[in-house]
Image 1 (cartoon, rainbow over the protein chains, first blue to last red):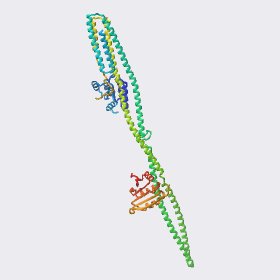
Image 2 (image 1 turned 90 degrees about the horizontal axis):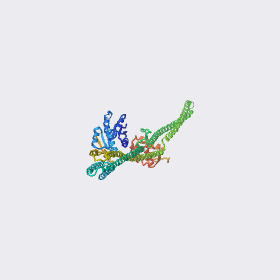
Image 3 (image 1 turned 45 degrees about the vertical axis):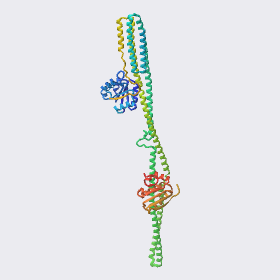
Image 4 (image 1 turned 180 degrees about the vertical axis):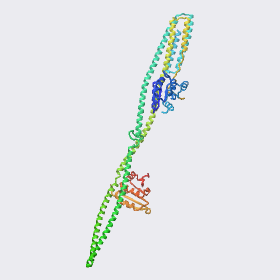
Length: 122
Length: 395
Length: 108
C-alpha cells in the first residue's frame, strides 16, 4: 500500500509540482489550499506525512501544524515545512510547533523525496 | 513656487523608487522608496515651515490656497498611477497563473506519457532480453522456444541412440540364437548319418539272415524292424530339419525388423540440431542486443528524471514571483493610502481657505507628522533572487 | 546411403590394443563382423579409426554403445579417432564424448 501525503499550499502551481514529484516516487497525494482546508482533509484520510507551506491565507502553516498536533491521530505525524521563508526565527517557530524538516523553495525534488523517505518509508 | 517644485521632485523620486521596486522587486528598492518618502515629507515640511514663517512676515493668505490645489491634484495623480500599477501587477499575476497552470498540466501529461513509454520500452526490452516473460504465460514452466526445441531434440537423439543400442543388442542375441540353431542342424546331420548307417547295417543283416535260411528267419524280422526304425528316424530327422529351417527363416526376419529399428539416418537430426543451434545463437544475440538497449533506456531514463527535476524546480517560479508581486501590490496600496491621507490634509487646508490660523496649522502639521511616522519599511518574506534551490533543515 | 562398408583390424601394443578401421559406411551390414572382431577378447584398449568412414547411421551408434557396455562403461577403454566433421557432428549431438575418448571433442 502506498503511503499518503497531504500537500498544503495556497499556490496551485506548488501543489501540482509537489504532487508530480511525490506521485513519481509512488506516494498517494491529497492537496489542500490552506491550513483550515487541510484540517478538514485530515478527517477521513489516513495520512502518513504532511508537507505544508508557511505563508497562506485563512490559516498559516505554523498555526496549522499546532492545530493538527492537537489531534490524537496526528500527534506523531511528521510535518515538512516547504516555504520561501528562510529566516532563522521563522524556522525556530516551525521547529517549536513540531515540524520535522524545513525546506526552502525552490526545492529540488530529490531533496524533498529524501526528506520524506527519512521520515517515512515509501 | 519652490515648494511646488520640491513636492514634484519628491513625487518624482517616489515614482522612480516605485519603478525601481517594480524592476528589482527587492528590499533595496523598498528602502529607496522609504527614504524617498521620508525625505520627501521631511524636507517638504521644513521648506513649508520656512515658507510659513516667510509668508507670515511678508505676504498674506493667497499663495497657500493656490498651493494646496495643485498639490492635491498631484497626489491624486500619484494615487491613480499607483492604482493602475497595482492593477497591472494583479494582471501579471493572473496571466502568469493561467499560463503556468497550462504549462504544468502539459508538463504533467508529457511526464506521465514519458513514464508509460519508458515502462513499455523497458518491458519490451526485458522481454526480448529474456529477463521477463509475458504475463499470460505460465512463468514457472516457460522456456524460450529455441531452448525448448533444443531439449526436445536432445530427447529424440538420446532416444534414437538408446533404441539403436537395444536393437543391436537384440540382433546380437538373435545371431547367438541362429548360431545355436546352426548347431542343431549339425546334430541333425550326425543323427541322419547314424540312421543311414543303421539302415545299411539292417540291410546287411537281412542279407545274412536270408543266407542262413530257416535259422535266420527270426533275425530277418528283426533286421526289417531295424530298417523301419532307421527310416522313421530319418523321417523324424527331416521334420526337425524343416522346423529348424523355419525357425532360421523366422529369426532372419526378426533380425531384419530389429535391424531396421537400429539403422536410422542421422542427417535429419543433424539438420534439426544445427537449425536449433542457429536459433539459440540468434536468441542470445537478441538477448545481448536487448540488454544493451535496456542499458541505454535506463541511461535515457536517468536523463529524463534529471530534466524532470530541473523543470520541477523552474516551475516553482510562479510561487516566488506571485509572492513578490503580492508584496509590490501591498507596497502600492500603502502608497495609495499614504497619498490619500496627505491629500486629505491638503484638502482640509484648501477647504479652510488656506488660512494661517496657527491652530489649524499645528493640526495639519500634526497630521503630516503622524502620516510620516506611521510609515514603516515593509519586510520582504521572500528572500529569493534566483531559482537557485534552497536549503533543507531537519529538526 | 553410401557404399557398403568394410572393416580392417589389427592388434598393437603386444596384442593389448585392438585397432579397427571402418571403411566407407559404418552401418548395420557391419554388425556381425564388428561384433566378432571386438568381442573376440576383452582387449585393454580399442581404437576405432574413422578416417575412411564416409557415413554413419544410428546403428553405428548402437554398435559403439554395445561396445561401451562390453568394456563395462570404461570411457578410457575406447578411443574414436580421425572422424570427419560430419561424423564428428553426429557423435557430438549424441553426446558420445561422455562415453568415449573422441579426438576433436572435449570431455564433457
